[in-house]
Length: 294
Image 1 (cartoon, rainbow, N blue to C red):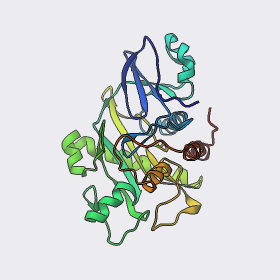
Image 2 (image 1 turned 30 degrees about the vertical axis):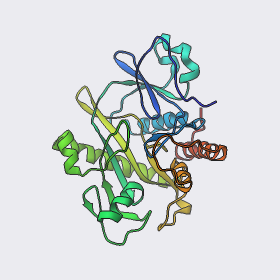
Image 3 (image 1 turned 180 degrees about the vertical axis):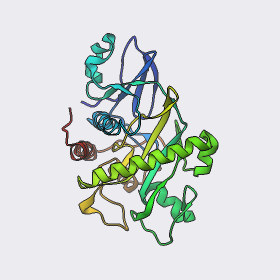
Image 4 (image 1 turned 90 degrees about the horizontal axis):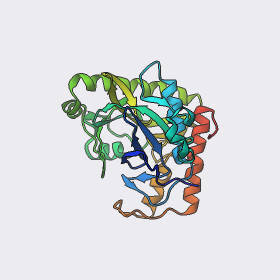
């Protein structure tokens, strides 16, 4: 049974994002990943069963994996460790929620790209650059970049995120902050790429959100999930065209094929696309983390 929207009577709702419902517990937030799916920055009417659980459990894996390298906001993902008054909502929380520290979040997305695809490819085809970074001529869809690049973007609550240059990002969050965020973004990406390559997965690109907790930069929201990253099977990698993937690119490709104009309302997804997407998310969790869905 897919969870489209949470309902926790008596608990203060802080807000609903494209995928996550956030509740304000005072000192902490409770973040619940629903099975909503967004594509081209529009929430689709059809949920993907188990998607929220995959996002939460994969994020929890990576937060723990990198905990000695970069602080994160996680307090617990175990419902038994949540405040007592939340445990009556176990059916909406189990496997898909996190109790987290509050952070002052930087208002930019921190994107690392190792390959040319998606919005980066569109920018490159138009200007020869991605986020102000000049790239070699003649690159094709899914080509590996000479080295991974940091390509920040604005964060849009509604509508499309917009790619910006490092200089523009520095104007938003400060020169010293963007230097550190770039360093963290590329370091985490490179370490994750090495880890995933041993499991037959290419991480084409990924995006992170950072904030400060008690004045210290920490990673927040989600980490290296099929929603925030492009995961490609390495044994099927063939540059010069779009790649098969373990993420929502499968849905994006379907929506491109049917000619949707990328404006709300979005079309319903057929059952075969829903089931195949759900299976891809669960498979990504299993291959990358070695864990089965809880």
